[in-house]
Length: 134
Image (cartoon, rainbow, N blue to C red; front, side):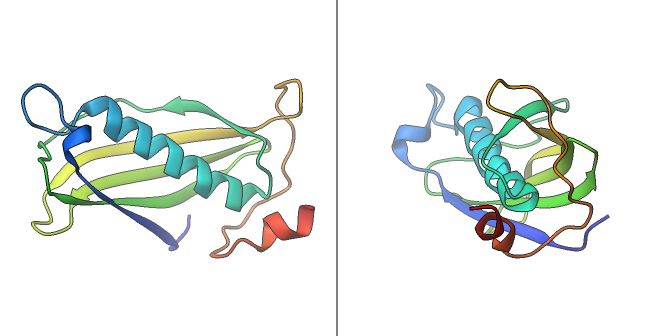
């Protein structure tokens, strides 16, 4: 749907490692979900969003201490209450894929957690939707 790409870089530090000296998978998922939420917030124009679904995880390579990773997000589509993204995580230096997520779905909610229509249909590169709400 969108040609817009959102890129975030993360540096793998000692506190991010598991007992095998590789990036802990849970830390990577934390980064992916948190940054995806920021993309969803800027796209939907509200901070009231929740993660609804993350597609199957397939860790295709390991990341190690000192690696610089890129988390690359694309907007796949807007639903009435939802936004679907994809995410590719890869080593910035080698270009090797670390993780691919075909679908990450966020839903706009009200104060009670009930899904609400967000009114967006087209991706935006900026944060103007957040400023127009407040």
